Amino acid sequence: MILRIKELKLRPDHTEQELTNEIQKILRLRGETPEYEIVRRSIDARKKPELYYVYTVDVTAANPRALLKRIHSNKVTLTEKREYAFPYDKKRMSSSAGAEGRTDSGTFPPVVVGSGPAGLFCALMLARAGLCPSCWSAGKPSRNVCAR
Ligand SMILES: Cc1cc2nc3c(=O)[nH]c(=O)nc-3n(C[C@H](O)[C@H](O)[C@H](O)COP(=O)(O)OP(=O)(O)OC[C@H]3O[C@@H](n4cnc5c(N)ncnc54)[C@H](O)[C@@H]3O)c2cc1C
Image (tube, rainbow, N blue to C red; front, side):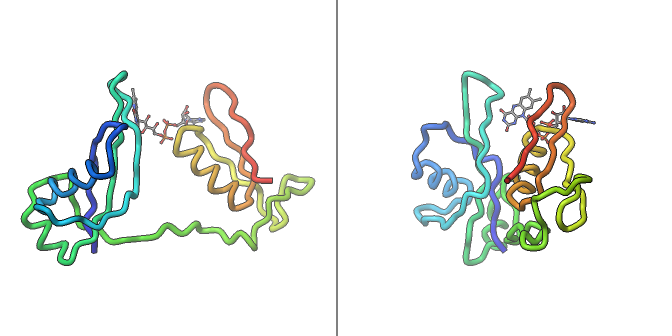
């Protein structure tokens, strides 16, 4: 088990030490240097011209449960480390579409509806897997995304 800290907000010009300090403060580590991994970093531009990085970090601790008990922060949760595994096998799937639009494996290329960040990232993962997705969205037309 690991401790996950969400909504860690820092200015874009922050140093690595400032991020470490913030983790120490939230976990009340008092001088102990935390071992952590950044699992997400987004930009909060909702209050332009003020910009912030918003981090999610996973902290490795000897006894995460005990540490969590003495912290009173809704930013911290106990979680299990899980690696994302893309559910397609690149070797089995092919990017080349046949006359009917089918791929070599006999399936149709995937269609992603919605070209927001989630749709574009989904299309990127599918394209990297060689599945030649089409991306559709309401509003202006988006370009076909393909890994060929
Ligand atoms: C005012 C505002 C400010 C924000 N500022 C920030 C910020 O500074 N930082 C940050 O990280 N996040 C910010 N967010 C949040 C961020 O915009 C969302 O978290 C993010 O856009 C969600 O991405 P998504 O791909 O899931 O959905 P969306 O971005 O909503 O994308 C969905 C897309 O699918 C399309 N779509 C929906 N239905 C259909 C359909 N039936 N057929 C075809 N197309 C369809 C939509 O037109 C849209 O383009 C802000 C949100 C708002 C509203």
